[in-house]
Image (tube, rainbow, N blue to C red; front, side, top):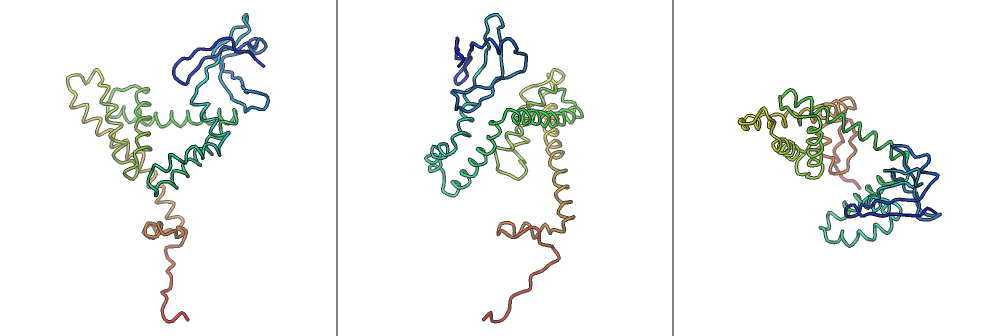
Length: 263
């Protein structure tokens, strides 16, 4: 067992620990992590080494309470579900089944926290996805001469994507996405537009519309192309989708009408 020699509460639910571990401190390198367990039968929790002191024989880690909560949710799924039931009763009945399904999906997604290797893979792949999407935001902003940095466009990308995901009131996020992107950009007026804020606002409005179209239209056309190659009727898919009919039915096939006595 390793001894905790120092603890500091950084902010609520975030703690700094200094742990006496001479063997680990001697070999510690930047970017490495340690795996902690409360006891011999405890779950493995990967944490990055924030600092180390070879002479003192200690390492420093930062423990994030939110991460601990997520880990606890994945390790004690039945307890999490029982704790969530009282809150589900507070929402309309028609949403309770959906909320239960969302909880199941969240718990399944958090299973990645059990495996440090998979956690690294998810982090790297997520970083690449966000960089690619941020690059699209930035390239289009250059064409509109918004004079914003790549970091700023990453911020716009994050806020607009969250608005799209959380405010589900229209198909394709039309409205929440555009407003969020526009409002974030309007908060940061570039020096070249000082004294001409109206022109900047018009450019930002046009940018948000074109950006959203650049994201949506390729997906829409690819979806239509897939329907066409699979010989699926779009009108049939829309009209029968809510009734549980299979979307794979060929559009050229018609059901024979039932007439006469079935007896």
